[in-house]
Image (cartoon, rainbow, N blue to C red; front, side, top):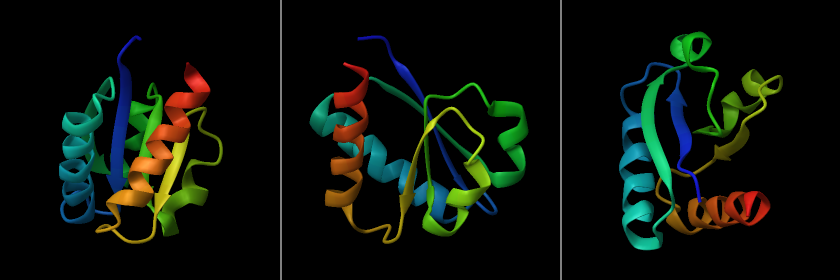
Length: 95
């Protein structure tokens, strides 16, 4: 399968997006997801709209309603099970 682009975003690009990137990287190691992951602040989204998956905090989901990307809204950064389920769901759709 072709590697997909994953963008992890939060409001400032510092705290929660970096923590989510670490979590997604761990899942890539565990599950072998073909993802190329970057993280950024929401303000940087305009320059990075060519992505397949967006992982963000739940309160930012509406900001991506016009995006063609698969958007995952995370409520609890520590909930790896939720993140894994959502990524499994995405890859089941694209296979």
